[in-house]
Length: 186
Image 1 (cartoon, rainbow, N blue to C red):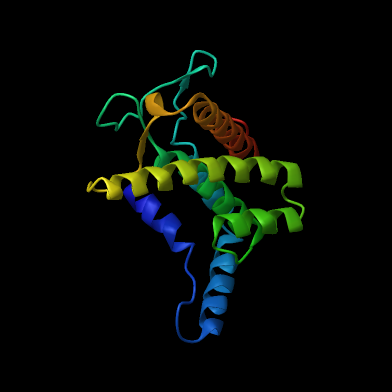
Image 2: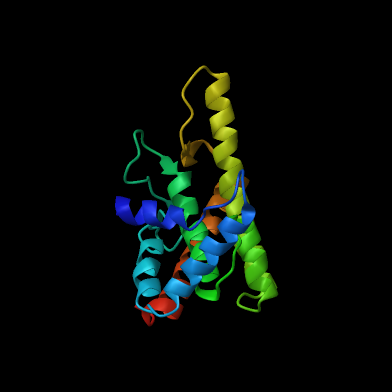
């Protein structure tokens, strides 16, 4: 799993200094190398399905993350990974050069691979998770603690808890789409 994670991060390479044409050339090479290996994308897709949203009892209750240090914690970074993986996977499939998750989602709409309404729902879920994560990290820093990626869902207000649950429902929908498109609906 760690090797696959590191490999998936490779696909987010971008130019920070130097000749940008070298990055474009490498991106073309990667896309050309992927084209004759159709088995790669389904294998890569399985990584997107590793995170299991912590919903139980028909989506009405949140469960703790398996790696939670305290009761009630949800790992927001892990929760965001299916969305990041979704955007990366479909961008690779379609040979897109974008590396930012939101830019990839927009590009997928432009190519017709994703409906605008679907993109909007995914972006809302991503935004909810990112805002909760950043707010928790700022609060930790202000309290003199080390920031992490956990939020205690038991300390959220009813609206935030509802948004978190809805984000998990959207993540499940994204994972179902990946499963259908790349793994035959398994």
